[in-house]
Image (cartoon, rainbow, N blue to C red; front, side, top):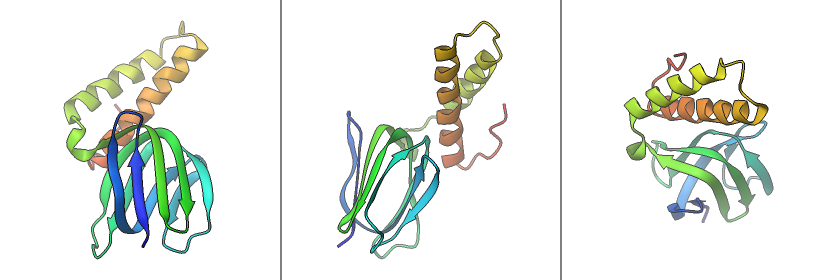
Length: 139
């Protein structure tokens, strides 16, 4: 049995779910994990986790913001700082937050840590909109 566990410090989104495939946003690129994959541990970037439950051809989608993924012979564990299912994403709020963070990034008086924080907000909201199937995230 190949299972997925996806958790954050605040909640468990997926627990011991039997899957056929999971795609995670690795720090250096997307990883497609199938049963029999070599064991590994990777840092995650902000992006979309997609997984297919056993016997299904459709993917479920979760947006994650930073974390770790561990692949072992029995499955995959995703430990994310933040994770949201599609049902939890408010499109209008994500669009407004993206626009606000993008605008703030243009402020020449931002300190380096503020630039990084705004960049992460842009990435997180772009991932939310991409997960909803909204391709135009260039506000």
